[in-house]
Image (tube, rainbow, N blue to C red; front, side, top):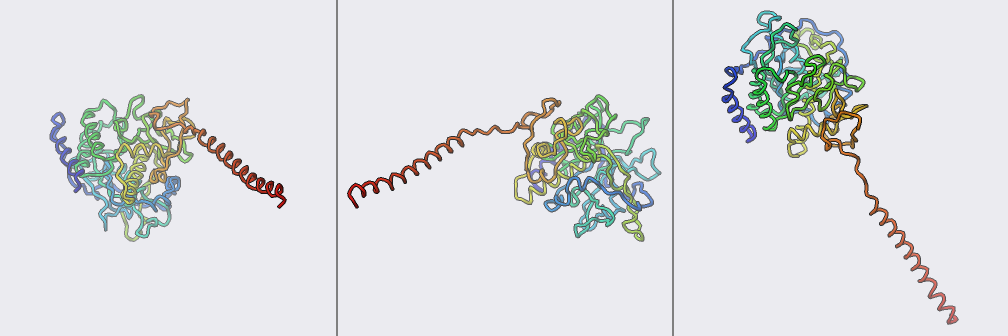
Amino acid sequence: MTLRRWAAALVAVGLLLSQSTVDAAAAVTPFDPRDCHVAAQGTAQPRAPWHIERLQMDRVWHLATGRGVTVAVIDTGAATVGSPYLQDAPDKRFTTYDLLDGAANASGQPGEFDCLHGTRVTALLAAGRGSDGKPVDGRVEFSGIAPDARVIAYRTLLESQAGEESEPQPLQPTTEAVLDAVARGVDVINLSQVVPGNVEGIEQFQAAVQQAIAQGIVVVAAAGNTGQLPGARAYPASFDGVISVGASNQFDAGDEVSQFGAKVDVGAPGAGLVSLDPSRYDASLGIQSQVYSQPISGTSFAAPIVSGVVALMIEHRANEGLPRLTPAEIKQRLIETADPPAAAVPDPRLGAGIINPLRALSGEIPQLAPNPESDNRFPAATYPPPAEVDRTPAVIGLVMGLGALFLTGMGLVVAIAVPAARRRRHGT
Protein backbone atom coordinates (compact mmCIF):
# COMPACT_ATOMS: atom_id res chain seq x y z
CA MET A 1 0.00 0.00 0.00
CA THR A 2 1.35 3.42 -0.93
CA LEU A 3 2.00 6.19 1.56
CA ARG A 4 -0.97 8.12 0.14
CA ARG A 5 -3.30 5.18 0.78
CA TRP A 6 -1.99 4.66 4.33
CA ALA A 7 -2.58 8.34 5.05
CA ALA A 8 -6.06 8.13 3.56
CA ALA A 9 -6.88 5.15 5.72
CA LEU A 10 -5.71 6.84 8.90
CA VAL A 11 -7.60 10.06 8.18
CA ALA A 12 -10.77 8.17 7.28
CA VAL A 13 -10.62 6.25 10.54
CA GLY A 14 -10.17 9.53 12.38
CA LEU A 15 -13.24 10.98 10.70
CA LEU A 16 -15.28 7.91 11.55
CA LEU A 17 -14.37 8.22 15.20
CA SER A 18 -14.99 11.97 15.31
CA GLN A 19 -18.55 11.92 14.00
CA SER A 20 -20.17 11.98 17.42
CA THR A 21 -23.12 14.03 16.15
CA VAL A 22 -24.17 11.22 13.80
CA ASP A 23 -25.74 7.93 14.77
CA ALA A 24 -23.49 4.92 15.18
CA ALA A 25 -21.44 4.30 12.04
CA ALA A 26 -23.09 2.03 9.51
CA ALA A 27 -21.53 -1.39 9.25
CA VAL A 28 -19.70 -2.06 5.98
CA THR A 29 -20.51 -5.68 5.23
CA PRO A 30 -20.09 -7.79 2.10
CA PHE A 31 -23.10 -7.65 -0.21
CA ASP A 32 -24.21 -10.68 -2.20
CA PRO A 33 -25.28 -9.37 -5.61
CA ARG A 34 -27.33 -12.55 -6.11
CA ASP A 35 -29.84 -10.98 -3.71
CA CYS A 36 -30.67 -8.29 -6.26
CA HIS A 37 -34.06 -8.44 -7.93
CA VAL A 38 -33.41 -9.54 -11.52
CA ALA A 39 -35.34 -9.66 -14.76
CA ALA A 40 -36.24 -13.14 -15.92
CA GLN A 41 -36.07 -12.64 -19.67
CA GLY A 42 -33.35 -11.22 -21.87
CA THR A 43 -33.60 -8.55 -24.56
CA ALA A 44 -34.21 -9.96 -28.02
CA GLN A 45 -32.64 -7.10 -29.92
CA PRO A 46 -30.78 -4.48 -27.86
CA ARG A 47 -30.63 -0.90 -29.07
CA ALA A 48 -27.33 0.54 -30.23
CA PRO A 49 -25.71 2.78 -27.59
CA TRP A 50 -25.07 6.04 -29.42
CA HIS A 51 -22.69 7.45 -26.82
CA ILE A 52 -19.92 4.95 -27.63
CA GLU A 53 -19.58 6.27 -31.17
CA ARG A 54 -20.13 9.89 -30.15
CA LEU A 55 -17.16 9.78 -27.77
CA GLN A 56 -14.96 7.86 -30.28
CA MET A 57 -14.28 5.17 -27.72
CA ASP A 58 -12.92 2.75 -30.32
CA ARG A 59 -9.98 5.16 -30.67
CA VAL A 60 -9.70 5.98 -26.97
CA TRP A 61 -9.42 2.32 -25.92
CA HIS A 62 -6.16 2.06 -27.85
CA LEU A 63 -4.74 4.47 -25.28
CA ALA A 64 -6.31 3.25 -22.03
CA THR A 65 -9.04 0.96 -20.70
CA GLY A 66 -8.95 1.81 -17.00
CA ARG A 67 -6.68 -1.05 -16.00
CA GLY A 68 -5.19 -0.56 -12.53
CA VAL A 69 -7.71 2.13 -11.55
CA THR A 70 -10.35 1.62 -8.85
CA VAL A 71 -13.68 3.45 -8.87
CA ALA A 72 -16.20 3.50 -6.01
CA VAL A 73 -19.83 3.52 -7.15
CA ILE A 74 -21.98 4.64 -4.22
CA ASP A 75 -25.55 3.84 -5.16
CA THR A 76 -28.21 1.13 -4.75
CA GLY A 77 -25.73 -1.70 -5.09
CA ALA A 78 -25.04 -3.52 -8.34
CA ALA A 79 -25.99 -6.94 -9.70
CA THR A 80 -22.50 -7.94 -10.75
CA VAL A 81 -23.38 -11.60 -11.31
CA GLY A 82 -25.62 -13.04 -13.99
CA SER A 83 -24.10 -10.91 -16.73
CA PRO A 84 -21.14 -11.75 -18.98
CA TYR A 85 -20.34 -8.03 -18.97
CA LEU A 86 -19.90 -7.92 -15.19
CA GLN A 87 -18.37 -11.29 -14.44
CA ASP A 88 -15.92 -11.33 -11.55
CA ALA A 89 -13.75 -14.13 -12.92
CA PRO A 90 -10.92 -14.25 -13.64
CA ASP A 91 -9.74 -10.84 -12.47
CA LYS A 92 -12.26 -10.10 -9.70
CA ARG A 93 -12.92 -6.59 -10.94
CA PHE A 94 -16.11 -6.09 -8.92
CA THR A 95 -16.48 -5.96 -5.14
CA THR A 96 -19.80 -5.20 -3.45
CA TYR A 97 -20.61 -3.91 0.03
CA ASP A 98 -23.80 -3.13 1.93
CA LEU A 99 -24.22 -0.24 4.35
CA LEU A 100 -27.96 -0.71 4.89
CA ASP A 101 -27.69 -3.67 7.25
CA GLY A 102 -29.53 -5.90 4.80
CA ALA A 103 -32.67 -3.74 4.77
CA ALA A 104 -34.93 -4.40 1.78
CA ASN A 105 -36.82 -1.69 -0.05
CA ALA A 106 -40.54 -1.50 0.64
CA SER A 107 -41.55 -2.14 -2.96
CA GLY A 108 -39.26 -5.09 -3.58
CA GLN A 109 -39.89 -8.77 -3.13
CA PRO A 110 -39.00 -10.28 0.27
CA GLY A 111 -35.30 -10.98 0.40
CA GLU A 112 -34.65 -9.13 -2.86
CA PHE A 113 -33.00 -5.75 -3.23
CA ASP A 114 -33.54 -2.98 -5.74
CA CYS A 115 -30.19 -2.78 -7.54
CA LEU A 116 -31.53 -1.35 -10.80
CA HIS A 117 -30.02 2.14 -10.64
CA GLY A 118 -26.64 1.03 -9.34
CA THR A 119 -26.35 -1.71 -11.96
CA ARG A 120 -27.05 0.73 -14.78
CA VAL A 121 -24.51 3.21 -13.42
CA THR A 122 -21.86 0.52 -12.91
CA ALA A 123 -22.40 -0.89 -16.40
CA LEU A 124 -22.06 2.50 -18.08
CA LEU A 125 -18.81 2.98 -16.22
CA ALA A 126 -17.11 -0.41 -16.32
CA ALA A 127 -19.02 -3.16 -18.16
CA GLY A 128 -16.34 -5.31 -19.74
CA ARG A 129 -15.34 -6.30 -23.23
CA GLY A 130 -14.25 -9.69 -24.52
CA SER A 131 -10.72 -10.96 -23.99
CA ASP A 132 -10.07 -10.14 -27.65
CA GLY A 133 -11.14 -6.54 -27.09
CA LYS A 134 -14.35 -7.00 -29.05
CA PRO A 135 -17.89 -6.46 -27.69
CA VAL A 136 -19.20 -9.16 -25.37
CA ASP A 137 -22.45 -9.28 -27.36
CA GLY A 138 -21.92 -9.50 -31.10
CA ARG A 139 -25.35 -7.96 -31.66
CA VAL A 140 -24.45 -4.59 -30.19
CA GLU A 141 -21.39 -2.41 -29.51
CA PHE A 142 -21.73 -1.92 -25.78
CA SER A 143 -19.34 -1.76 -22.87
CA GLY A 144 -18.43 0.60 -20.07
CA ILE A 145 -16.25 3.62 -20.72
CA ALA A 146 -13.47 2.05 -18.63
CA PRO A 147 -13.97 -1.69 -19.34
CA ASP A 148 -10.92 -2.82 -17.34
CA ALA A 149 -11.37 -0.62 -14.27
CA ARG A 150 -12.01 -2.16 -10.87
CA VAL A 151 -15.25 -1.20 -9.14
CA ILE A 152 -16.26 -1.20 -5.50
CA ALA A 153 -20.05 -0.95 -5.51
CA TYR A 154 -21.58 0.28 -2.23
CA ARG A 155 -25.26 -0.21 -1.46
CA THR A 156 -26.36 2.94 0.38
CA LEU A 157 -29.75 3.70 -1.26
CA LEU A 158 -32.86 1.58 -0.77
CA GLU A 159 -34.70 2.44 -3.95
CA SER A 160 -33.76 3.34 -7.49
CA GLN A 161 -36.77 5.60 -7.91
CA ALA A 162 -38.26 6.75 -4.65
CA GLY A 163 -41.91 7.77 -4.92
CA GLU A 164 -43.32 11.10 -3.82
CA GLU A 165 -44.57 9.59 -0.55
CA SER A 166 -41.35 7.76 0.23
CA GLU A 167 -39.39 8.73 3.30
CA PRO A 168 -36.18 10.62 2.50
CA GLN A 169 -33.31 8.17 2.27
CA PRO A 170 -30.80 8.81 5.07
CA LEU A 171 -27.50 10.37 4.07
CA GLN A 172 -25.36 8.65 6.67
CA PRO A 173 -24.78 5.39 4.71
CA THR A 174 -23.52 7.38 1.73
CA THR A 175 -21.22 9.39 3.99
CA GLU A 176 -19.87 6.20 5.52
CA ALA A 177 -19.31 4.73 2.07
CA VAL A 178 -17.25 7.77 1.05
CA LEU A 179 -15.11 7.37 4.16
CA ASP A 180 -14.68 3.65 3.52
CA ALA A 181 -13.68 4.34 -0.08
CA VAL A 182 -11.07 6.81 1.16
CA ALA A 183 -9.73 4.20 3.57
CA ARG A 184 -9.47 1.66 0.74
CA GLY A 185 -7.53 4.13 -1.41
CA VAL A 186 -9.82 4.25 -4.43
CA ASP A 187 -8.94 6.58 -7.30
CA VAL A 188 -12.40 7.88 -8.24
CA ILE A 189 -15.77 8.14 -6.46
CA ASN A 190 -18.98 8.27 -8.49
CA LEU A 191 -22.05 9.76 -6.78
CA SER A 192 -25.10 9.58 -9.03
CA GLN A 193 -27.41 11.05 -6.40
CA VAL A 194 -28.68 14.44 -5.35
CA VAL A 195 -29.64 15.89 -1.97
CA PRO A 196 -30.58 19.44 -0.88
CA GLY A 197 -28.28 21.56 1.23
CA ASN A 198 -30.49 21.38 4.31
CA VAL A 199 -30.73 17.60 4.61
CA GLU A 200 -29.70 16.08 7.93
CA GLY A 201 -26.04 15.09 7.96
CA ILE A 202 -24.97 17.37 5.10
CA GLU A 203 -22.02 18.74 7.11
CA GLN A 204 -20.59 15.27 7.71
CA PHE A 205 -21.20 14.38 4.08
CA GLN A 206 -19.33 17.46 2.91
CA ALA A 207 -16.44 16.74 5.28
CA ALA A 208 -16.14 13.19 3.92
CA VAL A 209 -16.18 14.39 0.29
CA GLN A 210 -13.61 17.09 0.99
CA GLN A 211 -11.41 14.54 2.72
CA ALA A 212 -11.56 12.30 -0.32
CA ILE A 213 -10.52 15.16 -2.60
CA ALA A 214 -7.73 16.20 -0.21
CA GLN A 215 -6.38 12.64 -0.43
CA GLY A 216 -6.16 12.85 -4.23
CA ILE A 217 -9.42 11.05 -5.02
CA VAL A 218 -11.47 12.49 -7.89
CA VAL A 219 -15.15 12.88 -6.97
CA VAL A 220 -17.73 12.98 -9.79
CA ALA A 221 -21.41 13.74 -9.17
CA ALA A 222 -24.65 14.18 -11.09
CA ALA A 223 -25.74 17.81 -11.46
CA GLY A 224 -29.38 16.89 -10.90
CA ASN A 225 -32.46 16.40 -13.08
CA THR A 226 -35.19 18.84 -13.96
CA GLY A 227 -37.67 19.10 -11.12
CA GLN A 228 -35.51 17.34 -8.53
CA LEU A 229 -34.55 20.42 -6.54
CA PRO A 230 -36.19 23.39 -8.25
CA GLY A 231 -34.48 26.61 -7.28
CA ALA A 232 -32.06 24.90 -4.88
CA ARG A 233 -28.43 23.88 -5.18
CA ALA A 234 -27.83 20.17 -5.61
CA TYR A 235 -25.27 18.30 -3.52
CA PRO A 236 -22.73 16.71 -3.65
CA ALA A 237 -22.37 18.27 -7.12
CA SER A 238 -22.13 21.77 -5.60
CA PHE A 239 -19.40 20.91 -3.10
CA ASP A 240 -16.05 22.55 -3.84
CA GLY A 241 -13.76 20.38 -5.94
CA VAL A 242 -16.46 17.97 -7.13
CA ILE A 243 -16.86 17.49 -10.90
CA SER A 244 -20.53 18.25 -11.58
CA VAL A 245 -21.95 16.58 -14.70
CA GLY A 246 -24.92 17.60 -16.86
CA ALA A 247 -26.57 15.51 -19.57
CA SER A 248 -26.30 15.96 -23.34
CA ASN A 249 -28.39 14.33 -26.05
CA GLN A 250 -27.73 12.96 -29.54
CA PHE A 251 -27.86 16.47 -30.97
CA ASP A 252 -24.98 17.65 -28.73
CA ALA A 253 -27.34 19.91 -26.83
CA GLY A 254 -28.01 20.07 -23.12
CA ASP A 255 -30.97 17.75 -22.71
CA GLU A 256 -34.11 18.98 -20.99
CA VAL A 257 -33.73 16.23 -18.40
CA SER A 258 -30.66 18.04 -17.07
CA GLN A 259 -31.40 20.65 -14.40
CA PHE A 260 -31.23 24.12 -15.91
CA GLY A 261 -28.84 26.59 -14.34
CA ALA A 262 -27.40 24.23 -11.75
CA LYS A 263 -23.70 24.21 -10.94
CA VAL A 264 -22.38 22.25 -13.95
CA ASP A 265 -18.73 21.81 -14.90
CA VAL A 266 -19.02 19.56 -17.96
CA GLY A 267 -21.64 17.60 -19.84
CA ALA A 268 -21.69 14.01 -21.06
CA PRO A 269 -24.15 11.82 -22.94
CA GLY A 270 -27.09 11.30 -20.59
CA ALA A 271 -30.26 11.08 -22.71
CA GLY A 272 -31.61 8.04 -24.49
CA LEU A 273 -28.82 5.79 -23.24
CA VAL A 274 -28.69 2.01 -23.21
CA SER A 275 -27.23 0.16 -20.23
CA LEU A 276 -27.56 -3.18 -18.43
CA ASP A 277 -30.31 -4.25 -16.06
CA PRO A 278 -29.91 -6.94 -13.38
CA SER A 279 -30.27 -10.22 -15.28
CA ARG A 280 -30.69 -13.92 -14.61
CA TYR A 281 -28.06 -15.64 -16.70
CA ASP A 282 -29.28 -18.68 -18.61
CA ALA A 283 -26.47 -20.90 -19.86
CA SER A 284 -28.67 -22.29 -22.62
CA LEU A 285 -29.35 -18.78 -23.96
CA GLY A 286 -25.94 -17.28 -23.26
CA ILE A 287 -25.68 -13.60 -24.01
CA GLN A 288 -29.31 -13.53 -25.13
CA SER A 289 -30.33 -13.82 -21.47
CA GLN A 290 -28.84 -10.36 -20.84
CA VAL A 291 -31.43 -7.67 -20.14
CA TYR A 292 -30.65 -4.25 -21.55
CA SER A 293 -32.30 -1.12 -20.24
CA GLN A 294 -34.77 0.73 -22.37
CA PRO A 295 -33.46 4.16 -23.31
CA ILE A 296 -32.76 5.87 -19.99
CA SER A 297 -32.05 9.53 -19.32
CA GLY A 298 -30.65 11.56 -16.47
CA THR A 299 -27.53 13.16 -15.10
CA SER A 300 -27.19 10.01 -12.96
CA PHE A 301 -26.11 8.22 -16.14
CA ALA A 302 -23.94 11.01 -17.50
CA ALA A 303 -21.84 11.03 -14.31
CA PRO A 304 -20.42 7.46 -14.64
CA ILE A 305 -19.41 8.24 -18.22
CA VAL A 306 -17.25 11.08 -16.88
CA SER A 307 -15.97 8.85 -14.04
CA GLY A 308 -14.94 6.32 -16.68
CA VAL A 309 -13.05 8.98 -18.64
CA VAL A 310 -11.27 10.05 -15.45
CA ALA A 311 -10.20 6.43 -14.91
CA LEU A 312 -8.78 6.38 -18.44
CA MET A 313 -6.90 9.63 -17.79
CA ILE A 314 -5.34 8.23 -14.63
CA GLU A 315 -4.21 5.02 -16.34
CA HIS A 316 -2.88 6.84 -19.40
CA ARG A 317 -0.75 9.17 -17.27
CA ALA A 318 0.69 6.17 -15.43
CA ASN A 319 1.41 4.35 -18.70
CA GLU A 320 3.25 7.41 -20.00
CA GLY A 321 5.33 7.68 -16.83
CA LEU A 322 3.90 11.11 -16.08
CA PRO A 323 3.13 12.50 -12.62
CA ARG A 324 -0.39 11.90 -11.43
CA LEU A 325 -2.76 14.84 -11.83
CA THR A 326 -4.53 16.22 -8.78
CA PRO A 327 -8.35 16.22 -8.67
CA ALA A 328 -8.30 19.95 -9.43
CA GLU A 329 -6.02 19.41 -12.44
CA ILE A 330 -8.21 16.61 -13.78
CA LYS A 331 -11.29 18.77 -13.40
CA GLN A 332 -9.59 21.67 -15.15
CA ARG A 333 -8.40 19.46 -17.99
CA LEU A 334 -11.91 18.08 -18.54
CA ILE A 335 -13.22 21.65 -18.68
CA GLU A 336 -10.52 22.92 -21.02
CA THR A 337 -10.65 19.98 -23.44
CA ALA A 338 -14.45 19.74 -23.67
CA ASP A 339 -16.27 20.27 -26.96
CA PRO A 340 -17.79 23.71 -26.44
CA PRO A 341 -21.56 24.04 -26.67
CA ALA A 342 -23.13 25.61 -29.73
CA ALA A 343 -24.28 28.77 -27.95
CA ALA A 344 -23.24 30.30 -24.65
CA VAL A 345 -20.13 29.18 -22.79
CA PRO A 346 -20.74 27.95 -20.19
CA ASP A 347 -24.01 26.35 -21.15
CA PRO A 348 -26.60 26.25 -18.32
CA ARG A 349 -26.95 22.47 -18.77
CA LEU A 350 -23.51 21.50 -20.11
CA GLY A 351 -21.09 23.89 -18.44
CA ALA A 352 -17.89 24.07 -20.51
CA GLY A 353 -19.30 21.57 -23.00
CA ILE A 354 -19.32 17.85 -23.72
CA ILE A 355 -16.32 15.86 -22.57
CA ASN A 356 -13.82 14.89 -25.24
CA PRO A 357 -11.96 11.76 -24.06
CA LEU A 358 -9.27 11.87 -26.75
CA ARG A 359 -8.33 15.44 -25.90
CA ALA A 360 -8.64 14.78 -22.17
CA LEU A 361 -6.07 11.99 -22.42
CA SER A 362 -3.71 13.84 -24.74
CA GLY A 363 -3.97 17.18 -22.94
CA GLU A 364 -4.59 19.05 -26.20
CA ILE A 365 -6.38 22.25 -25.20
CA PRO A 366 -8.20 24.28 -27.84
CA GLN A 367 -8.40 28.04 -27.54
CA LEU A 368 -11.85 29.06 -26.31
CA ALA A 369 -13.08 32.62 -26.12
CA PRO A 370 -15.72 33.58 -23.56
CA ASN A 371 -19.17 34.56 -24.75
CA PRO A 372 -19.94 37.96 -23.20
CA GLU A 373 -23.67 37.23 -23.38
CA SER A 374 -23.42 34.07 -21.28
CA ASP A 375 -23.68 33.69 -17.53
CA ASN A 376 -20.02 32.92 -17.06
CA ARG A 377 -19.60 30.96 -13.83
CA PHE A 378 -16.06 29.84 -14.59
CA PRO A 379 -12.98 31.88 -13.73
CA ALA A 380 -11.48 33.80 -16.60
CA ALA A 381 -8.43 31.55 -16.54
CA THR A 382 -10.57 28.69 -17.76
CA TYR A 383 -11.35 30.43 -21.02
CA PRO A 384 -8.26 32.45 -21.96
CA PRO A 385 -8.74 34.95 -24.81
CA PRO A 386 -6.83 34.25 -28.01
CA ALA A 387 -3.22 35.28 -27.54
CA GLU A 388 -2.27 38.61 -29.13
CA VAL A 389 0.76 37.99 -31.30
CA ASP A 390 3.40 40.74 -31.25
CA ARG A 391 4.44 41.01 -34.89
CA THR A 392 7.10 43.70 -34.29
CA PRO A 393 10.04 41.24 -34.10
CA ALA A 394 8.89 39.56 -37.30
CA VAL A 395 8.61 42.89 -39.15
CA ILE A 396 12.03 44.02 -37.96
CA GLY A 397 13.50 40.69 -38.98
CA LEU A 398 11.94 40.95 -42.43
CA VAL A 399 13.26 44.51 -42.94
CA MET A 400 16.72 43.52 -41.78
CA GLY A 401 16.67 40.48 -44.04
CA LEU A 402 15.70 42.54 -47.06
CA GLY A 403 18.34 45.12 -46.16
CA ALA A 404 21.00 42.44 -45.89
CA LEU A 405 19.92 40.99 -49.22
CA PHE A 406 20.14 44.48 -50.82
CA LEU A 407 23.60 45.11 -49.39
CA THR A 408 24.81 41.71 -50.55
CA GLY A 409 23.53 42.48 -54.04
CA MET A 410 25.26 45.87 -54.06
CA GLY A 411 28.44 44.22 -52.87
CA LEU A 412 28.34 41.79 -55.80
CA VAL A 413 27.78 44.65 -58.23
CA VAL A 414 30.75 46.57 -56.81
CA ALA A 415 32.92 43.44 -56.80
CA ILE A 416 32.26 42.91 -60.50
CA ALA A 417 32.09 46.52 -61.74
CA VAL A 418 35.24 47.97 -60.10
CA PRO A 419 37.79 45.41 -61.45
CA ALA A 420 36.21 45.72 -64.92
CA ALA A 421 36.57 49.52 -64.87
CA ARG A 422 40.22 49.22 -63.84
CA ARG A 423 40.93 46.81 -66.68
CA ARG A 424 39.40 49.20 -69.21
CA ARG A 425 41.40 52.09 -67.76
CA HIS A 426 44.72 50.19 -68.16
CA GLY A 427 43.83 48.79 -71.55
CA THR A 428 43.86 45.24 -70.42
